[in-house]
Image 1: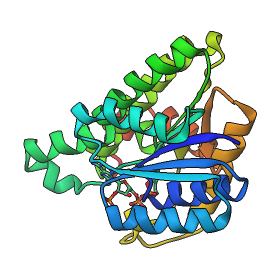
Image 2: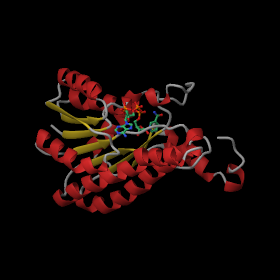
Image 3: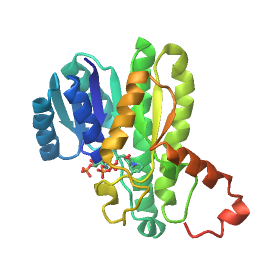
Length: 246
Ligand SMILES: NC(=O)c1ccc[n+]([C@@H]2O[C@H](COP(=O)([O-])OP(=O)(O)OC[C@H]3O[C@@H](n4cnc5c(N)ncnc54)[C@H](OP(=O)(O)O)[C@@H]3O)[C@@H](O)[C@H]2O)c1
């Protein structure tokens, strides 16, 4: 039985993942902004077989509350084996271009708040030489595109930060897993037309649970064909890339 903290638990990807853990009899502590969403998730996860379920309402940008939230999760679960960091917002790129304040907010939610949380979690797991850290970044962090480079640059921060953290914690037996989903059909992408490259949250959840079980300290593109797509996109010379309308 694993003791699992889920940050941004209301996310469609996080919820699908929490359901898999619950059905295996793991214990979960859910953190998010909406009490009613967390309450109904708790009830659902209990019915699915979770050994224990707790919750806490917190905005990820309330950095000063992170430490207390982690203490709460540990005492509710009686320890902590896995942390899944899943919160995020796909902000309006055009609105960010017109507002430095909005840009800062998007960078904070998708990048800085993740780094702040991971810094605290890493210190705990490093001391114990135990624990697994899973963070949802994005293929958008692999190369900035004009259509979403504020979101993409926040995810690039998360990708680079988790890369360094993985090296630091690997010798201690603490896997850091960076998840890079491609297009996933969730409320975040509700307005986008869907096509053959789109995945369901359940597919991403299966990949996340598999990586946790393998203790795979690595970067996981989900679905895996995105590794090839992003390799090709990264190979496009800047002299060509700067002219593309992506
Ligand atoms: N969907 C995709 O195509 C895709 C692709 C690559 C990566 N991702 C990443 O996957 C993760 C999960 O996204 P999703 O697709 O499952 O989207 P989602 O269903 O829209 O979930 C996003 C979640 O993040 C929470 N959140 C946003 N800002 C927060 C804050 N300041 N504090 C706490 N929670 C906050 C939201 O809570 P509220 O309900 O309170 O707003 C919501 O529960 C995100 O990190 C996203 O960037 C998604």
